[in-house]
Length: 76
Image (cartoon, rainbow, N blue to C red):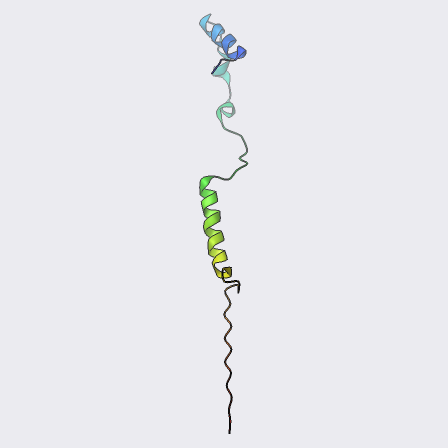
């Protein structure tokens, strides 16, 4: 990968004995502050796991409900 022009200038300044601006960077410059857009693998697995648990009842199309009909006829 190619070096940027700014990095080349910083390295040249360090070689010449001048101050390295990388040393005076704050801790936030090293931190990864990007906002995650996609879910992690674990979040995806949990989502699938819980979706399957919730949808197990509706696989038969009856939402997990069972209907029993008992017909008794009494003849006297």
